[in-house]
Length: 443
Image (cartoon, rainbow, N blue to C red; front, side):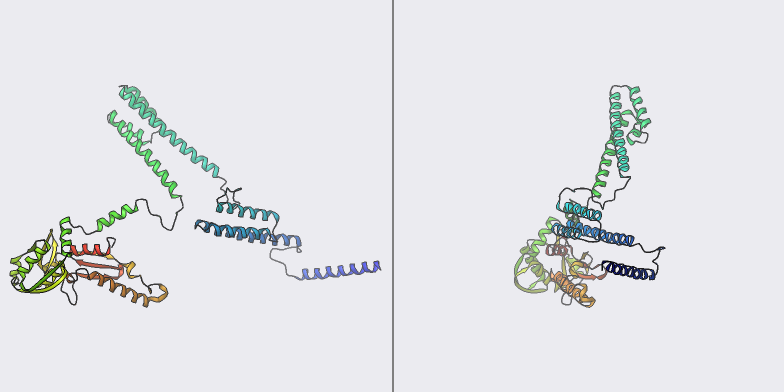
């Protein structure tokens, strides 16, 4: 029975081998394959492909962890690295050497993320084989430069000492030595000039100090340029001082006396004029404001304006600016603050005394609930138009009678320039100053 079973087993094996050979031989040859299929080679090829896939995934994981760590999310980075490490340790289809290498890569990155010493160099880091030679060459250059700086400095000191000792031969010998060793050095070149010895020493010392300082600054600049940024944007240390100087230079410049005039115009007063002659009303306002009002009588009389014509206005708590503009408007007049005085002029004359300034408002125009691109261009435009109308309305509330409009005849204008998202404001300097106080000097 054993013999029969053995024969049956052997027959089944032969049959199976025959079927396997038929299947294998019946397949088309693979590209580049010239002989029969090698099962061991195929297994190794599959293992190599799996390891390459693993290595790509590990590299991607390390890259993602590095990004998380740089954004101060070290906990998430460490958790992802640990998960990948467990995945590698339990993975099938990769060799033990690859498993060890991948684990070392993850351990090294995990140590960096957690702030621990790296157990060994990161396998991902491919060092330049010529790096030691480059470092040595750079070190040699720096050492040579420092040696030259030291020798030139000491040589200049010896020349100076020889000059003080009136030993011209010794000084010239030292200059000749320095010239032979360092012919292109600026300090040595200065020593070779045909000026007096003392002047040459002064120039050489100055060039030495400046050259040394510039070299140090250059090295600091190179080292600083290699530092990673600490945020989305990094401002220089003196940014606040620079901004303050810029805002100061852009602000409307008015004298202290003109500031007092503007403050007086903003002061609330009480008036009760009933057909009071304009000349007397202006005198009363001058007394109330404690500021003189300059009236060019001859120019007004030439235009046929009567200063004795009566004006009427009553109110309590009105600003001096509002009262003055109101009574002047009835005569086709207005006022400007110029040359540290309140000058009464015609509207046409005031237009030649205006100041034009441009204010960027793009950040304000594009703000609002419907300003995002998801709302489409139509809603964006409507939002911008609404914002612009509100901004212009707020501006014209500063000294309302000084603006040109439907109900006012002032000289001031506000124009929006769409390409630059800016408004062009034309009005008197004191109105611009009031705008700066109301909306901030940054505008």
